[in-house]
Amino acid sequence: MASVRLGFLAEVEREREERSDAAELVVESRDLVDDGVRGDLRPSSVPVGLVAGLGLEPHRIMGLTELLEPDQVWAFIASSDDSRFQHDARSVNQLTLEDPHTSAVTYEIRSIAETYLALDSLVFAASPQRRLVLAPSGPKMFSLVCMLVAASQPDLRPAVWRVGPASASSATPLEAAGDVVAAEVNFRASAIDGG
Image 1 (tube, helix red, strand yellow):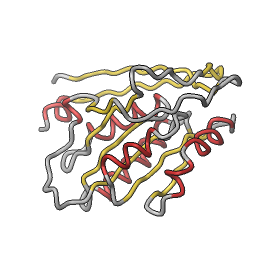
Image 2: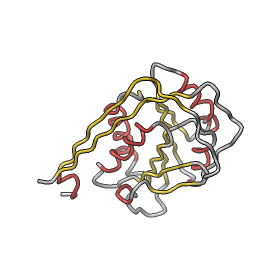
Image 3: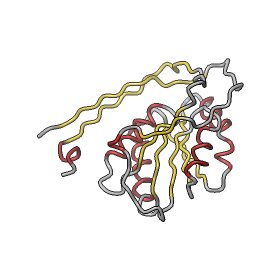
């Protein structure tokens, strides 16, 4: 029986003090992360739902919301011992969070398992009524969780989109917070082959 073993290791990041808000970022690069998480085809009459990981880039998720026109947005915001990231993510995504069709969901950045369970539950509940797009613009750990949740769905699989800045935009300066999050995921052949 074939299996796949995936390891993941990332440092938790926090924003640097000397952050500049001079350049506005817009959605210029948007595409599937991988064909394996492209989502199932559904009739266009089924409304779109957007699950977004909020990062520190202003207007990125709002631009995606304007592109997709979802009837519901679930905005996932990372929390940790260092409250600066959550505060800044809420601040730069204020327009998205104020939209009446947006629900904010807070998750602990250091708990991949709890985040997986929360997102998996949301996808299970929302998929029958919506074509879901998972857009992990926030921390890398949330990107991993989005890919794992999408890959584990046997039916009504959501799409995972990479949403990036225009090539001329500079990245938001971040520094390591000092701790590491690690995960190991094992897939059995039945999960890989669909059997």
